[in-house]
View 1 (cartoon, helix red, strand yellow):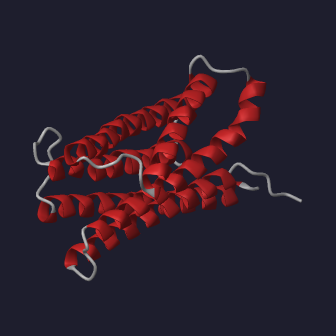
View 2 (cartoon, rainbow, N blue to C red):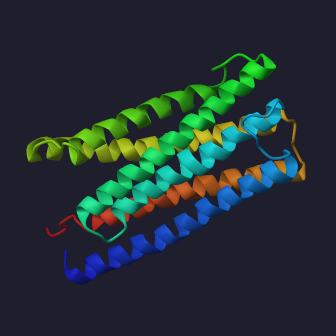
Length: 229
């Protein structure tokens, strides 16, 4: 691949990344509008279980969805020293994990307050599996590629699995978010209301966020492939 082709792919990846940022930020803003305007806000230590629950979608979307996507784009599309990109990549993923822990705990706390069974829905099943795999992926990535770091042969052998696993986890995260929003809209019986349409738009931008991240990463990797025949 010549220099012009690489520059074209880099420009395309950067352009798609801009759209990904816009989609992700829009989803977060719509989520805040929903929680503050329609759901009364959020408070983790409130005696009101609804306000406690509202911490769940907030921390899961802003942290686990948005920050994980930003972490992937920071490594694959930002031009910087490799070690710098690795540190930023791992740090953003760690922030996503921490916010995810708070969000998941808020859901369990809500269930305890209203005497609701835990882990009863498809959303919760996909979510907890995704979170556990995400944490395992982070630990393997930390010890293999950053600190203390494996030998070159091991890194080369595990890298395709790390990349493919990360992209699969992104799709699982998006799926978890969409099923959660759909489940909440159904339980609140919001069909046909302005609140329902707001949730639909939020979910739609979450989906666009995930798709644009995956496409931008694909173009970024394409820059490093030799296509000569």
